[in-house]
Length: 235
Image 1: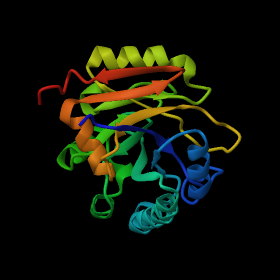
Image 2: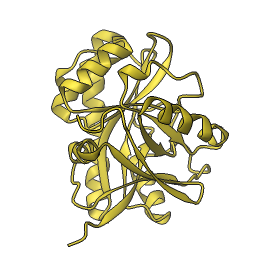
Image 3: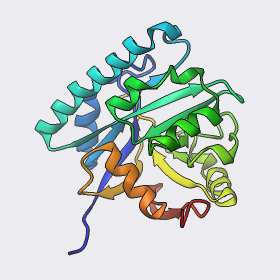
């Protein structure tokens, strides 16, 4: 039987954790359902200016608690809600990193993630089957392609003109191309995301699905494309 696919937005933030967000998990879910999405990945910010290193464990518990509340609401609505994280690093230069395939256990056992370098974070993700994707890479500048799995097409209005640059960078280095809306504000609605199999029940399932063929099927700007990470294909 042919596999059924669903639409998700893999880049949303809730104001319970991300200070820049103006929407709750419940509001995100209601809005995404209205727009025709079937699911979303909550990637709240993990940043140095949010909390000192010694409070990392407490912060992670808040991330998990906020997600759990959203997941409970999503389940009632028949909406898929997945756990992720966006980590801001300063080495080798400032950049934001989307982590896909994390679990509560992974978040609880790992060190303060924003203290790591890109190379260290990539190694940690590789050890745990987590995908590391540079968010909106041309807001700053793309990082070392040798220590990431992919880059993101960001569908917010300040990034749409950078899509050709992101596509070319991914193609040049054989990387995955994800796509998301970076949803923060109720009055700023963008459309874009990825397709995943309906059988995916957790963020780990999504990462394993992508790693199976190193492919992502994305939709944005009225188009759909399949991107293959040639660098990892066959690994």
